Amino acid sequence: MVKLTLIARVTDGLPLAEGLDDGRDMQDAEFYKQQVKALFKNLSRGQNEASRMSVETGPYIFHYIIEGRVCYLTMCDRAYPKKLAFQYLEDLKNEFERGYGNQIETAARPYAFIKFDTFIQRTKKLYQDTRTQRNITKLNDELYEVHQIMTRNVQEVLGVGEKLDQVSQMSNRLTSESRIYADKARDLNRQALIRKWAPVAIVVGVVTLLFWAKNKIW
Image (cartoon, rainbow, N blue to C red; front, side, top):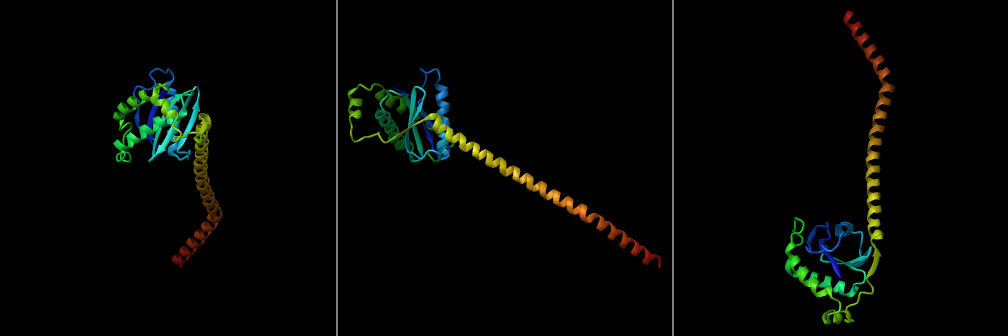
């Protein structure tokens, strides 16, 4: 069965819509929502190139499709048919594009299209029972294939993002440290030049002063 449904803009991970009643029968719904947000964050950095993917997480599995720089994601029980999950997402995508396609890029606040929840709930009910004639027909539709859609583990997917974050943080730290070392090196060179030439400058200054004083007296 379908447990969670979320829609987000891929370019920055901004959540656009969500099934408001989703997860009420799950004690750990917030945990999985946090995983979804982490997945959206990874997608916004271009770390997963596949436009369709399934991601295993505990007893559930995330399915998502990316179209028009929008990610449509649902979380289902592992036993729920993969083909129905992706057809459910296709239905959401088609309606969302029809209703909000020209507003997606200008959306400035989270859940700007929260009213889309009405369509999410209505569509989800159609897909909940896999034994209905409608869903059996969809399962037997040979024109819609999902065998080639990759399935990965959530730790593997999120781990890629964590490693890239660590590399980015290390790179930033090294850049900052190199600037500090460069500044210190310039200060040390300046101090070395002062120590080297200060005595000479003092001697020259004293000689010049004595020469000037001698000319004044004479």
